[in-house]
Image: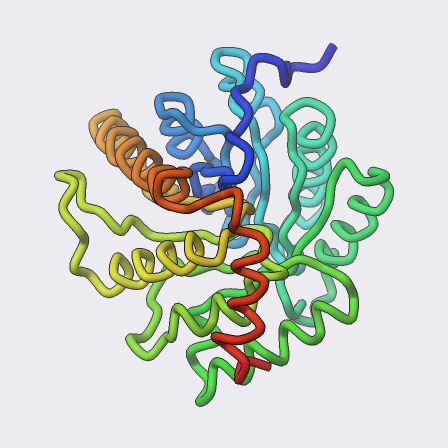
Length: 298
């Protein structure tokens, strides 16, 4: 029997997205903040970002939280390569985390960068693809698309359409990262309409303040618009809510983030309830809508 007892984990309601906590590991490999908030909140699982972690967390670190409250490490965002100092140790820790994630913590999705920078180190993206294929369907991998990077180019919608066509050729999924510094020109509704058929995960900043009032920040408004569009399109993938990063540990900060996350979790699911969306008629209605309301989208 593994550390992860799936029978003890509440399954998401059918016809709605799976809402998870989006956490970030620190540069030196601590995921305590994300694991603590996930432990305190109502979340089904944790979506952990390792892209900026110079040293990946150890699997024992995750196991310590998992034993107390069955924290499920549902998905991980991986760096393209591991290079620089102490590559062997860092690669060994990441490989162990992937293996124990699959066998013990319920990991089902690995997200790799769209483009891997050439490096003399270890190609993590290629290794993740091989790892997913060897799992015989237990673990799948998706290609991560960071909106902040796409917005550096003149026509981000054309680039998104090109990415989708490439992804469709290889029959892969897309994980869309809407966190970070995204310019005001990002067209949330149009971007999601182009990607929705391939979306497996969408990572969002908080769209509500801890008081429950709508966030007026650019990131908050973008997240709110994206969430409305996802509900309108009948999205049933994963929604990752990013409320706390890595860095220094503060119990007060963790408690506040947990309360804020709970509020966002309930609001997200409320938008996908049968009272808001007619589940029985959703599939044919959205299929028709995609063909006729957005015919100009490539």
